[in-house]
Image 1 (tube, rainbow, N blue to C red):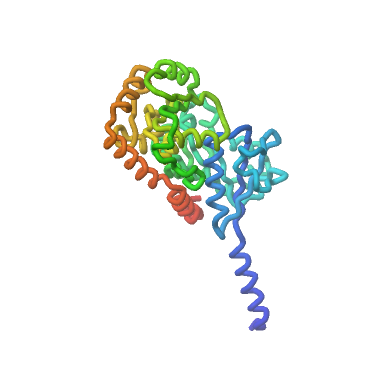
Image 2 (image 1 turned 135 degrees about the horizontal axis):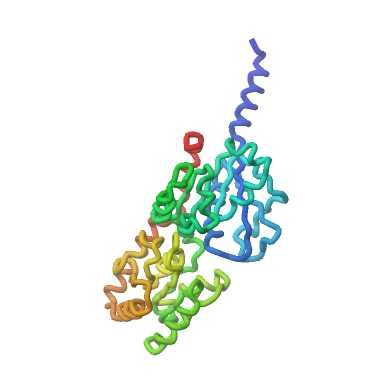
Length: 333
């Protein structure tokens, strides 16, 4: 029989080993702020908030570490060694940073991969990311439309989950009262700058104050403009996996006009949470006219419905669903 002190030591070592946090490695090529980077940061933060996982991140040498970078206060790794990870978290083109490493390839069957899929482009055979669907991974899609698109390819290797994008309400400014909103119409045209400027010219006589965002601006300034707007006309790409600015504008109390872009269908509900034109100039203009014709009662009802929809897209909901998948990792992999 083993001495009691040895039994205690063995028990302590077993407990310490069992409590050791699992290392989840992230990789980013951060050239400028994008919504996709922000969402990866949210998933990084979900893991950091637990006692089970330790998220670590490596930035490419070309990455920018300025105030726009959500990880600016977090110490990054000096070297990228994916073969040392307990778990890998990959998104976008991150696969390219692991599939060229022989040390990782020798161990890849033993290292679970969480693959965040944020766009419909993954399902396009002409897109580089399409080929990555054949790699074994546990995939998390930001909308059901994205999940349906990649599964329809027949290329997906591994389980697919849908977790609707959550919005970080704590990062938004305090919502201004209607009386303090001094922009009648804000056109968010970062992805369609020429269309936005053309629409501004056609609409400028209908509003006292109209402003168009046609290029990237600091996020704090962007959110401030959303907060000051009574109406927000969003111009996403024609096909998006998820379109966060429309959701942010809803959270900040604006009447949102946003064309159908596929990945916004779960929260852009026509005449319920927003106004949803077809993606053509004539229909957009007609829908803006409809927005101007809303009664105050109709306007307040849409704003109320939109804010209720926001609760479905909370970061807390996102974190709960993600961590439930992480708990099931042994059986999923």
